Length: 296
Ligand code: UTP
Image 1 (cartoon, helix red, strand yellow):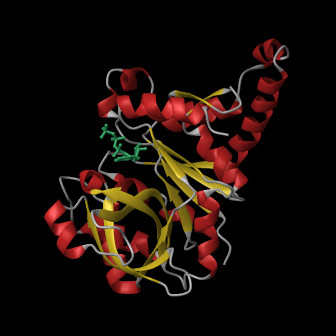
Image 2 (cartoon, helix red, strand yellow):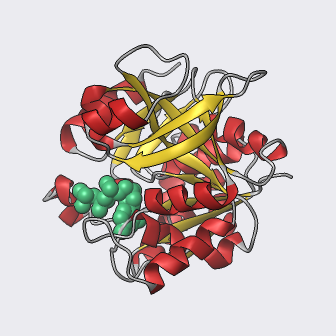
């Protein structure tokens, strides 16, 4: 089965970037690419997904933000385009953005009720197909293959199960990530049959319950920030919203993923050659901007 669709939620409040996020949402902050061009952060998801062969992209936004993002992609008016003639690379960029503006669709998250709630808004877009999901305030790079592509390719062998990208994390990082237990597949040790998923586990819980074979002591496998989701995730999120099942006041995707695992099985792919850049808080933002610019 070919994966054609991807979802990028950018509807969060960006509280930790206040007051800058009061001027412009964090997913529109400028990030300079390896080619020296300054783009809005979310724009790199479109470039990466396009390079990975994804045809349709749904961006989840707050009410009213779709116009702002669409305007960005449509690019400037003719007068401004004339100014860009002095900068051929930027003029080319404007042309490519216009073509994205025709392929991107929007779904609106009316209330900011968590990541799972944001993802649920893309139910109609997914229309019973498997979708790639990427964290809107992170960026991803792979060498030589895009991690989006690697994950999408697993749809061929996942038997309809969801697959989450994971990478190695230390005890200190457990408080930030969904973390798994599971067993590696004999013929393909990067692929893991997941036996438990816990969001932000305490170290003692992780030590007791979240083992994956062939990992060094003090190391776990946590969410990398992208998932290949089977359509039943939308039914589960719908049930959680109907029954008001919240964690820390929010509808969390990780809880839905654990329910999906119990019902249908769940896979994880350990990312090895890929990098993740976190732009979600100011100091990580500074580090990521500088590392992203230096990418080969
Ligand atoms: P975060 O967990 O960083 O939340 O979201 P946030 O609201 O953006 O930031 P803080 O906590 O207020 O500082 C991770 C990604 O999920 C999106 C965000 O836009 C971000 O790209 N998100 C989060 C939504 O789309 N909707 C939500 O309700 C929450």
